[in-house]
Amino acid sequence: MTVYQDYKYIMQDVGNLYLGAKFTYADLIENEEIPFKLKMLVEKHIKPDLDADTTLESHLYYMDTKGFIYQIFCQLKVKVKFNYIVQKKNLFGHQKEGFAMKTLKVEEFVKMSPAEKEKQGIVIQEVSMSKMALMTFSL
Image (cartoon, rainbow, N blue to C red; front, side, top):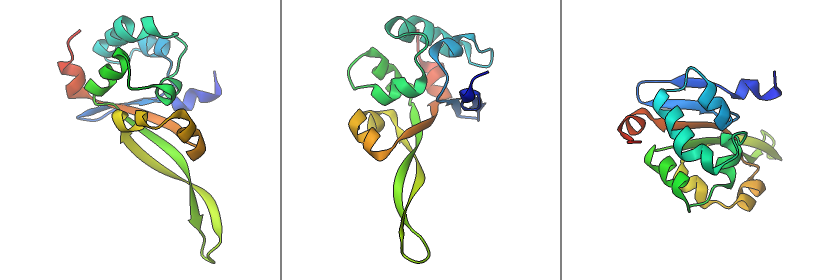
């Protein structure tokens, strides 16, 4: 068992599917809880262009706006939930580093360069997608 096992989770609500960012594409295909349509989408369109051991986190971190996979993520209405470093003031007015959480659409997240993400200390936690968009996606 790896240290990242806690960050490999699947949750669902009425409208969305939430995936832990440490899932690799191979894990997604093998996991029984992943919807079949998403498995097929990964198998046919994403896995041939990437290494199967690529995590969702690293793929999204370095993704750019070019390419078919980016268009797939946009069509699935993918959102990225991440932590980033912020400066906070404590009770006595002293500056202190802390973390804040934010969720962005994949289009907005990908606009940031990897250098900007590194500067802000961004760590991706979760990827969510619309179940309706997944359902209407034709393979």
